[in-house]
Image (cartoon, rainbow, N blue to C red; front, top):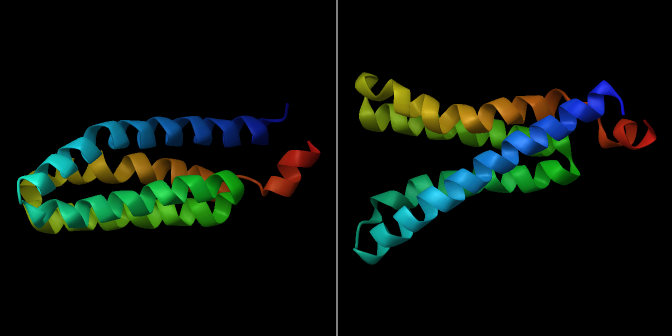
Length: 118
């Protein structure tokens, strides 16, 4: 197995862990907030869904999925930065970086055609 395959599978592993964590943590919290009548969780759930869709796209096309994950992570970070201000910069990193880092790895990993030949 070549190094490029290891990098690609490493990105898949990191992304799967990120997606699983946020699905198991944020979706129940968001759904309970919606049931209670709090609609301020809708933008965050939409941004999270956008990044999660990027993961599933990255399984088939690493460049497109990586761009979706990067843009979703950046949008979440900017949204949380403006929502919480400078005092909540850690929250922007907690929600943004777990999608941006694997997205960057996916984006710069070799195309699937090269992975299949190796």
